[in-house]
Length: 198
Image (cartoon, rainbow, N blue to C red; front, side):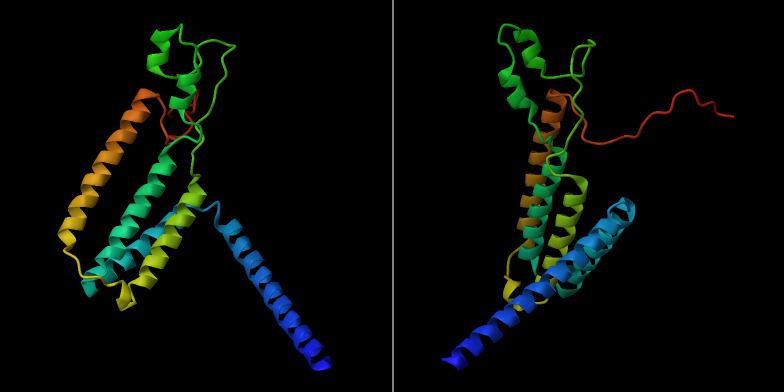
């Protein structure tokens, strides 16, 4: 009976040690993510370099086209979530008074009176989460490209054509949505007034 208690205690000790090490690793990783958060340009340069390494691997190995296609579909999904507003204006449009049908067809716009509320553009997927998910996906795809089980033989031009058609259709729909509800998902910078060019 005492040997069974000893095994239980050693198992509990090993499990708690593993949990403590995991928590320490997660804190260190979160600290690293917090440190790189303000460096948007450098983060995206690193992600572009990782994507270049993945594409170079695919080009030189002449395989893993299914992995590349799956990565492309996932990145397209992330990009669409990045472009979309958190609160869909088409749902707000359904809540508007039906007596004012002329304005309901145009969708919401910027406030024109002092009592109207200004609502800034809030993304459904914030930039940092977009970057982090993109980088993780590219890294996983790069790792998958080293295992032959993921190298399914396919005719890659069909996948490329299908992806291009899918990209064109989804982006066209997204751009129409942006035009219809009058929002721009990109921050073009704050204008500076009153500065003279001397």
